[in-house]
Length: 82
Image (tube, rainbow, N blue to C red; front, side):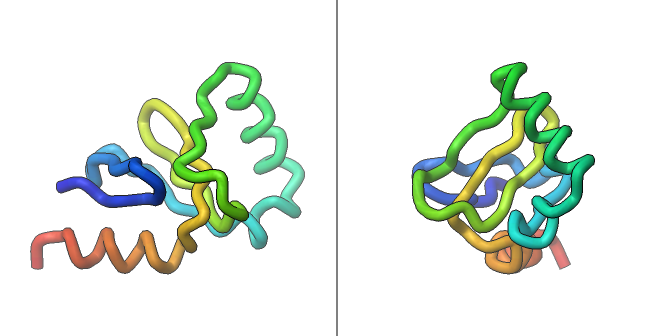
C-alpha cells in the first residue's frame, strides 16, 4: 500500500521507517547532524516546498514534507490491514 506524503510523492508503507515532527525534533543536535549528513549524501528529498512540518525516513531517502506527522500517521493507519 502506498502512503501519500505530500506533493506528488507517495511511498510504500513497508518502506517507511519513521515519521517525525520537524518542530519537535529539530532542536535535537543528533537529529540535525543526521539530517545534515543525509543532505551531503544527496538522500534528502522534498515532497513539497511548503513550510516543512515533518520528515519521513524510508529505507532509501528522507522526505521533507509540509504534511504534518499526525496526518501521515492517520493515512498510514487507514491503509493498514485491521
